[in-house]
Length: 127
Image (cartoon, rainbow, N blue to C red; front, side, top):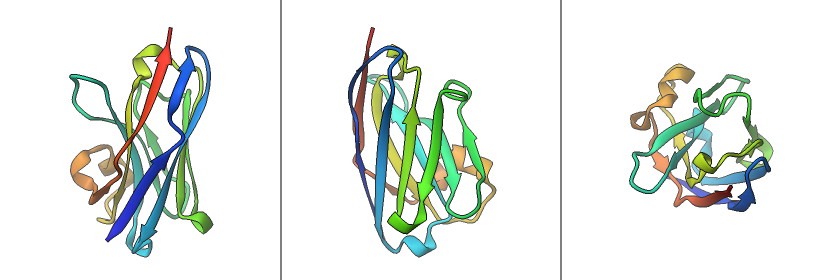
């Protein structure tokens, strides 16, 4: 079992920056990749970014590429999402997820690749 706790959400003006964190605990040794998803009111949960737990492979949604950066600190069992040049359309609840299937990094753009999910943290971007 892996427990994920997100933090760092909040209210920011358009064009601003915010960093959200995801602290993992439990059987983290089995984690192969971590990802961030988001869900806006009335919309489906969508992929944002993913990172391999070892190595440096990352993948991003087109809508955030060049503005968001996913990173990890293995010593702290924590994954970060640095969000720059935020737009009102980035407003959503951001969820952290962990997967252990060992598939290629691009498989982790899909929700079905993840075994564990956090409770989410709200990010609101005002115009």
